[in-house]
Image (cartoon, rainbow, N blue to C red; front, side):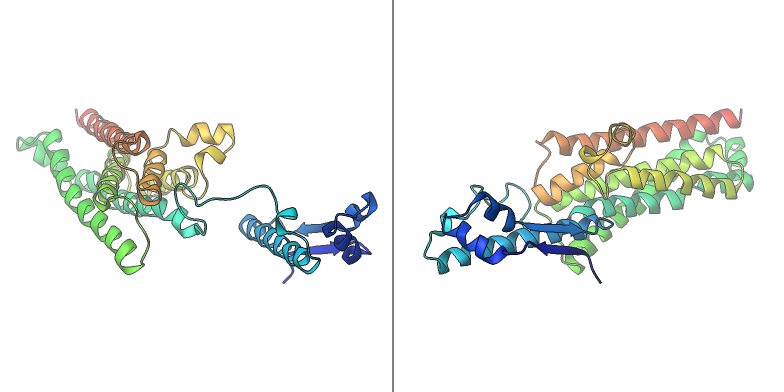
Amino acid sequence: ETYGTLRFEEGFTPSLSKYAMRTASPDDFKRCQLYVRLDKTSNEETTVLKSEIHSAYQKFREKLADECGQSREGVQMPIVYLPPIYGKNELQMKDFVAPGALCVIVFFLSVSITALTLLTDKTEGLLQRSYVAGVTFTQMLLAHTAIQFLIVLIQAILVVLFHIGVFGNECKGIYILVVILLIFQGMVGANLGFFISAICSKEETAIELSLGLLFPIILLSGMFWTLDGMDPIPRFISRRLPMSYAIVSGRDIMIRGWYLTDWEVTRGLLASIIWAAVFWVLALLVTINTHK
């Protein structure tokens, strides 16, 4: 398969030799240039190819300078890349996506479990019978929330264990912070499921609404693309979704090794708590108003 073309001008080699010997004319400068055209349908492949071409050409120039008896410093770019402050030079796509993938897994599982919980109770008459027996809607929702919290806790621990222990992925921060973040995100998904279950009257509607909400949230939350790299309108929407700040917080913990003392980590946790509380209150209000 072809991913691009690399074109040389006629007289490339002698012109490049003159360039290395510092005797090149303006025409020689033009003839020793490389003309590259790449297939941009895959941005990741293009980025890697650009880096590899630049690195290979730089090594070639240094080797040519050695053979011509010149100093390597004369052909090197005046830019020195030091070790990165955070992360690593060979950071892979999976390292960038992993924090978002963990949040999505826990979030999606929680929504899928709770999206039909209250709806099933309503259709089978359990909700109304419990209310007649003296159990308030608040107590019923708290009971469902407590059970879901235990499920989310187990899910978060298992996801982190598999991510680090089985697949061998790295986490520079504290593991317990990742677990706590995933628990909060799981509760956001659970309470969103409760809300969907409360406003829907049919199982088909609840399932369709769950899927309709999940995919935009996943795609716009910065899992595959940073929030700062988005256009203004998608970025404005993304910053107001329940998973966006949590994914940023997860990257800060796992890749940068940050703690609660850093605002971006704390912001992700606070955003998750607020969204969980908002969805829980909405689910309660809808349930109460429906059964007045």
